[in-house]
Length: 134
Image (cartoon, rainbow, N blue to C red; front, side, top):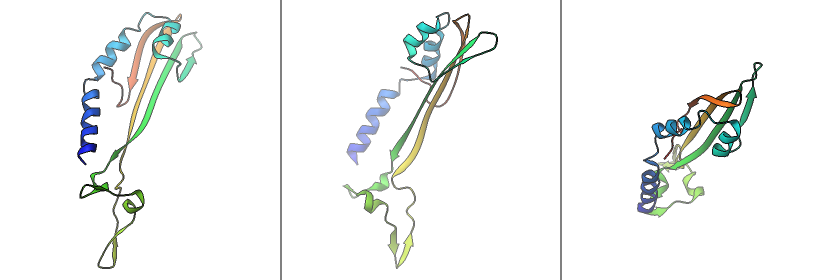
């Protein structure tokens, strides 16, 4: 249990400095750049949309599902196997549902759109819970 808590605290401390404000500052640095320069910074986009007037939207989407382990998986310091974790508990001959002992699934998501006119980044917009930078 101490090992899991230690790993969580390490990950938290490494990501605690990442903020949306720093992400916005990073996005602001791309204004005025060409699509080629943007892709050099951000990599290959998820999607590129060309509008009738010749303007372009370059879209980057990030999604990751993380499983946050439940403390119920641990019993007196001993790790419970997956088979044991998913067996129903019994008490007095009655099964007691255990819920999601494996943990909670958390989806981290960020979608960023850059709007270009004449192949130059004019503005950006983002949404999601994982739009942060160090």
